[in-house]
Length: 113
Length: 117
Image (cartoon, one colour):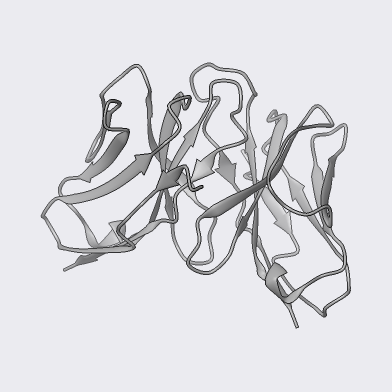
């Protein structure tokens, strides 16, 4: 049973436009939701997170939205830049299990110049 | 400050052998977790250590084991290697286990890429 799902394996957008990456989860016990970005030959790096008590968190060009009733979160990147091209992983964890995060399979974002 | 360091970065083994991977967390981080990433797959949780104790374990066979030392450095071992164990093994550290801002953020190393022939 995959508790965190990213249904789009890939996404291609034009530079300057908005990128929207989606993630669904099934476990209502998750307290934190995080997005990580991964370049080839590197480990994932933390991008942005949101607590389950909030519905939006913004950090520069990146905004994460959480819809608890739908068990859905999304990452918006505006404007998209070629350097944003990477694999994006959605992850979820509990309050007391920081090290045990559950990851989605990732979405490969390509931003075309 | 130095990031998470994993060694070796690449290694090739044959079926039936065993392998040990090493991870040095960020200074001050006491929680170390291990994840396996196979092609086209997300990161699968292996186990987490905190204060030299295994706190959580993922759904992997007993051939996968780990330990943590008093300086928070961690090792994972895979015995009797199978072809399906070929993967990128990622280590991540975090500052603490329970709650608080930043506690749930993992800092990953670059990974150890294992190829089993």
